[in-house]
Image (cartoon, rainbow, N blue to C red):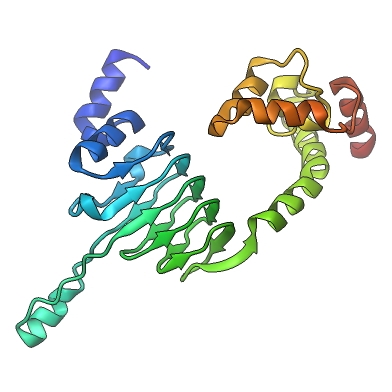
Length: 237
């Protein structure tokens, strides 16, 4: 990114110009933030800092965009007009460890998100979101446990990888290079001679050694990437 581009971003978006500048701003404002907090689209994310002392974000939290996190709302203005009284609404919000908040989600005042939770795209979350579950919808409801979701995703890996190769070949007229399979390399890799893309993936969420150990211990479905591509070609013929 050029200096001019960075300057334009700062002038246009201020503290939301980058994830780093946004996180620094949040911390300086008084929001309590753990380690490895990631905001993928800071320019479209809105985190309420009117009451920074009411917001706590744990470790290994990933937020896409546009995500909104609120610790207050102004609905009491209607009551004030009708009854001549200020009846405020300011509630704590806490987000646990190892949480993913999907595209377009809104976290309302008073929400408590537990550990190991996925909040689906466009969900509107309020109340208590228990540890170890996926929530989706408006209002957000418990959909499936993380354990069941893991098994479901495991069982879908080969089918999705084959389709990925098929679509890649149809679009670009060639088979993908090995690094392109960065989300499916457990199908054919034994952890030896890993390319940089695979190393990067293993390092996400700060558990590289655990992931590498699992990769080496698992029984891979294909002896090599070439064997995997041969299988894909046969399936897609």
